[in-house]
Amino acid sequence: MSSEETVEAERLSRAFAHDPSPEALRQAYERWGGMVYAIACRAMAPHDAEDVVQQTFVSVWRSRESYDPDAGPLGAWIVAIARRRIADHWRSRSASELAVDPETLHGALEAGEGDPVSDAVEDALTVQEELERLGEPARTIVRLAVVEDRSTAWIAERLAMPAGTVKSHLSRGLRRLRDRWEESHAASA
Image (cartoon, rainbow, N blue to C red; front, side):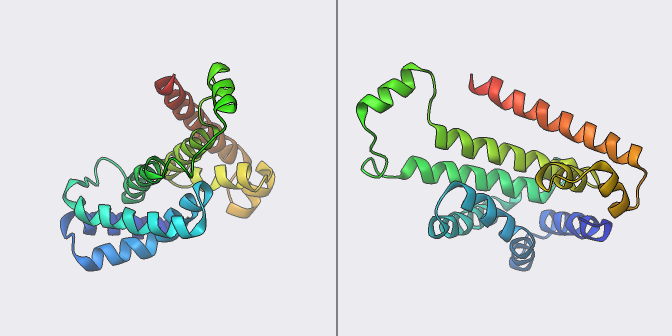
């Protein structure tokens, strides 16, 4: 995300908080709707993901007065709501859709495995949420290094930054992701 995009996201966050009009909601949807859809697609089928996006932005609209831009970026707040809508989706699925062989379930529970799909979805959402909180340029550096598997030298050249600065941002960003990961897993244990 460029500095212009960061400034635009901050402007939109402030506008949404101080004048929660339908226009601000439209702009928020244009800005973060695709990201919410991508997150939802990782957790479910595309047609279900479309429903979750709609439910997310309905929830954003209904709870707009509770958004505080000083507590965090609007995108992170929207992702947190999306995370709850995804969890709601999985909870609301009918028992017949989630039917599992009782012996298989018993074996998984005995082994302490829990629900691997729900765990994977929650892990992906935790990482995405924390990436949103990182801010720039750390967010871009972590994504390039981890998701695209780029070297620090390549990132430094691409972003016109000293390699040491890239390494520092990457180290701090990964440490924050690790801490958040451990925190979320300690809470679920």
